[in-house]
Structures are given as C-alpha cells and as structure tokens.
Length: 168
Image (tube, rainbow, N blue to C red; front, top):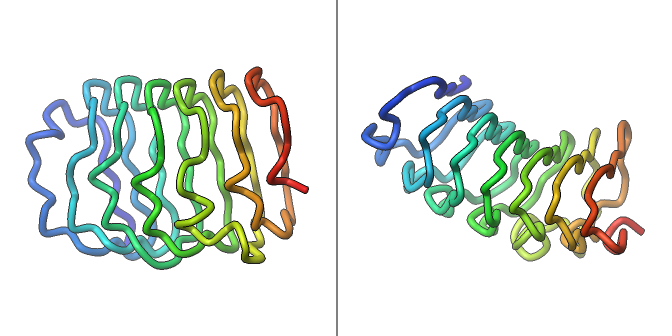
C-alpha cells in the first residue's frame, strides 16, 4: 500500500530502519522541523512514486540512498532547502509516471538521475515533466534519456537555467 508520513512533530525520532519496501507511494509531507532524512536507510523499493511535500527545512535525503530498481515517479514540492537528490542515484529507471520538482529553490542540478535512474542512455517515457519555480536550478542534462512526455511538459520560473540541454 501507500505509506503516508505527515504532520509528525518528532519524525526524526521514529525508527524506520527495518522498512525495506513500500508497495505503492511513499509520501512524506508537512514535517516542518525535519532537516535531514537519514532514515529509512534500508528502504530499497517503492512500487510507484516517491513524494516529498511541504518540507521547509529539509536539506538532505541521504536516508533514501538504498533505493534501487524502477520507480514510477518522483515529486518534490515545496522543499526549498533541498541541496541535491544524489541519494536517488541507485534507482535504475523512472518510467510511465512523472517527474515533478517545484519550489526546490536550493536544488542546482538533478544529480545522479543520469547515471542512476537510467534516464540518460535509455528511452524513458513520462506522462508529466514539471520543473517550476526552482530558483537555483541550472542543469537538467540528467533528463537526456527522456524520449517522450505523453502529457504536460512544463519548465517555468527557473531563472538560473540557461539551457534546455537534456530535453532535445
């Protein structure tokens, strides 16, 4: 099923170290004081989407570095201090769903998505690709392997993005 973690004041004290798999979506939402996501360090698979939403102080997601295999989508929404998404480098592929990154103002590049998720050098098909209001985003070459976006393709209000290289 879906694992929703939201509105918990002391999430950093919750032990999720034995969590290995989430069947559908992992939603981490509205944890205003969360600064780093160090757990769950043993999480290796998410059946559909990883959704990080409304996390105003989150800067690191290193606890997701054990993720591997295919995932249906990644959503990062209102996570203004997130510095990188390199922890997602173990994923093999994003297929069939979406990449939505909005209001992640500290994010400068899409990290290891090119080597990790297999987007570069593959022919990933997405239903949606949204990069919106990302003040520091300057490099999207990690998207070079996206061969098709069947639905909405939006790149808007990313003032440091000087090239659409990766979306040819």
